[in-house]
Length: 294
Ligand SMILES: [Fe+2]
Image (tube, rainbow, N blue to C red; front, side):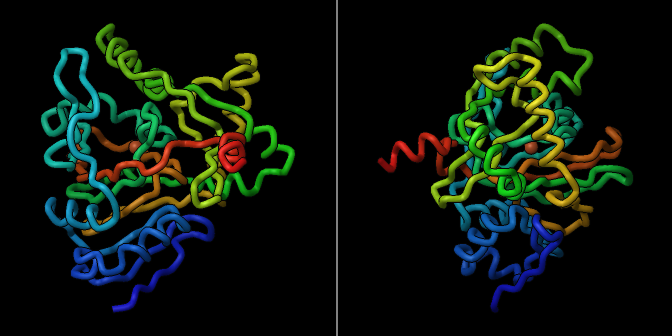
């Protein structure tokens, strides 16, 4: 059956109409990858994928992330869950490794900015919803870059930002223990270009709350510039806010979008299941991309 879709908002997100069997078979995988690149977020309603189906759909679109990504302060491996599937919950009984990190999801971010090659995309489906809050918001970092003036683009194309776990989590965690700091500092401080020149030729802003400072400029100028870019990129015209229904499957492009969840009741039992696709290209600056062409 042919793939049809409609925009969720003018510049972010499309709802895709496709049979579940076609989604599982991967028959439209190339079209879906292209649409994901163009629209940032893909929504499929009434899919109700179980864990194995979620993995299957993920594998039609890219390389499913499996295995250890990080060691905790106690030496245990913080892994990518059960064969590439993580349960996202604030309940430490459901998700002992990640529950303490998840409040960081209330703030605008990209996943995996501490990695050299950030994840390509995330597949996300709800198992239990909270009665209040819990909408997920997505901001289009391609569109936000495209709308900048030529002067702003030329300036930003040259800059690099250092991303830290502390910057990502400190604003939302007040009961921070020495053990928490130890875990945060065990993640590398990663420098990325502020503008990503993708292999496709398109460019996007690399913004996230994890962005601690811009290299080579003063602290207050760096702070003001990052805050100003964050305000610019999260304007309504670049944002799609998703109200979840059971059965939804949402896939977002982690390389061209930021996301955040609106706060919800910790006791609600809200639980989502997530698969992640491995990244396929490092973040390359426009200046570096030009040099590689020469
Ligand atoms: Fe996230």
